[in-house]
Each structure stands twice: as structure tokens, then as C-alpha cells.
Amino acid sequence: MKLYTGMGPNPRVVTIAVAETGAEVEVVQVDLIAGENREDHHLARNPAGQLPTLELDSGQCISEITAIAEYLDEVSSGTLIGSTPEERAETHMWVRRIDLNICETLANGFRFAEGIKLFEGRIHVIPQAADDLKKICRDWLSKLDGLIEDNEFICGDRFTLADIMLFAFLEFGAGVGQPLDPKCERLQAWYSRVAARPSITA
Ligand SMILES: N[C@@H](CCC(=O)N[C@@H](CS)C(=O)NCC(=O)O)C(=O)O
Image 1: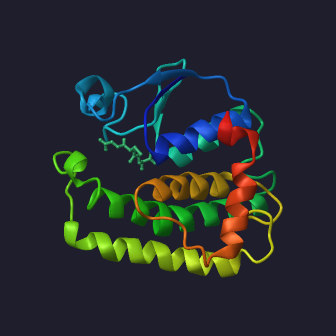
Image 2: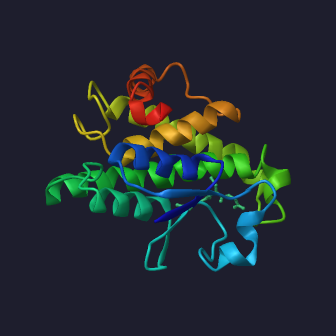
């Protein structure tokens, strides 16, 4: 399997998932800043022109980080999604909430503001939406800070794809002017727990 990857929080999610599952992939770096991911040879792998993309030995290409991470987990007998229908449903529920309300709002808040020079020729940017998107993200993080209670991870005592996604985007946010509010004390403690995992520094 070849993993076409580069900089940014979406590639980071899959890099952590690879380390967590032990999946064996050949890593191929694609130059996102230079726009190599928007060239025809990458568009043939992923019509969205984004990273990452996983190319299977059969030639089939899989994009979208949730699909890639779930595939890697499944072929490696991993534990990132769950071992029962109920566990898998719980993981998918949290992945969807975190993806729509935190990852997407944080990323678009960046793309429409600090990242606008890089993105304005690639996607439709809405600068006037940036502050509101960032606020939606912050509000959701505050809500999540209450919901996580004293759980070790997002899905209780199970470390899942939901934790990886939230971690990778908060890590990215910290570097682009969207740090986690120090008042979110439970999430701050959760972040330190995840940061200590070997997959984060692998
Ligand atoms: N929904 C996609 C998002 C992928 C994405 O936005 N990737 C970013 C890197 S973090 C990218 O390729 N940006 C460069 C570009 O859009 O040209 C996924 O789940 O994989």
C-alpha cells in the first residue's frame, strides 16, 4: 500500500492511525505548498485533489481520512473503531460530531483567514465566515469539555479514531491561532494523555 501524504491535520490523522495500527505502508510525500496535490497525476488518485490518499496494491485509491483510518484498522485487526456493533456505533457517532463541528470549522476558519493566500486559488473561500466558524469550533470544544467528564478518552476507556481526529486538529489549531481554551480543563488533561502515546511521536 502507498500512502500519498503531506503536511496538515488530515494527513496527520492517518499518520497517527498508521502508528496505532502498525499497518505497513510505503509513504510518498506530496508537496502541498507547491500544489502538487492539485496536479493531474494526484487528481487521478483523488478527484478532490487533497491529501492523504491511500493506494492499495490492487491500484484502488481510498481518500477521506475516516475511510482510510477505518480501512487500515480493519486490515490490521486494530481497535480504533470497536469490536461490537455498539462500540462501532459509538465511535462513528463521535467521529461524525468531531469531524463536522470541530475539524471542519477549525480547518475552514484557518483556510478563510490565516491560510487564505494558500487556498484562495484552490477552493472557494469565504473570509467573512472565518470568525463565526472559529466561534462554532470553540463553542463545541466547551460543550465537549463538559461531556467528556472524567473519561479517559472520548469513548470512555477506549482510545479510538475520535481521539486521533480531535488531537490532530487541536494540535494544528494551536499552531495557527486557534489554541484550546485553557478553561477547557478536562480536554487539556485529555490532550496531555493522548500526546503521551507513542503513536504521537512515532
Ligand atoms: N475531507 C478530506 C480533507 C482532506 C484535506 O483537506 N487535506 C488537506 C491537508 S490537511 C489538503 O490536501 N489541502 C491542500 C489543498 O486542498 O490543496 C479528508 O477527509 O481526507
